Image 1 (cartoon, one colour):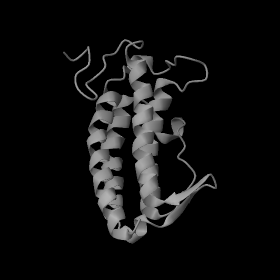
Image 2 (image 1 turned 120 degrees about the vertical axis):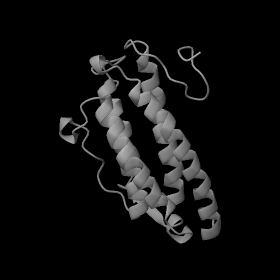
Image 3 (image 1 turned 180 degrees about the vertical axis):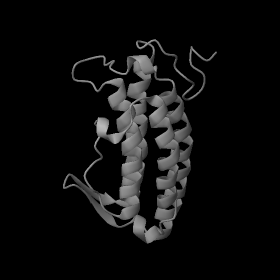
Length: 165
């Protein structure tokens, strides 16, 4: 893929990610604050763990793409300061659009540069942009399945849900 093609693909992926961000925020905001320890299985992340993971890693992935290098993933312990869905939504609204704007500003030749994801995957930045969107949607889907068992309502994701009709 040449740099012009990469920039065109990036423009599409960035618009798609920006659209998905609104849905992600609706899901985060729908998490009942009184049941953040909920997890469907001992191997699963808690609701708070997923809220933190989505919030911190959306920002991290986009900033790493913009920087052209991956740093260690963010600390999602209590030290991150996200203690409830409202904290997560506020941070998401502040940090993730700014990180997406940094990727939006990249020229096509930067998007074609290969980035090393901590020795696990080596791929062009444009490929990591596609992966960032999939990663976010995947974990948002996990979190959305937690909502009803936690006593919450599922917001519209790709259209209305049984709770929004």
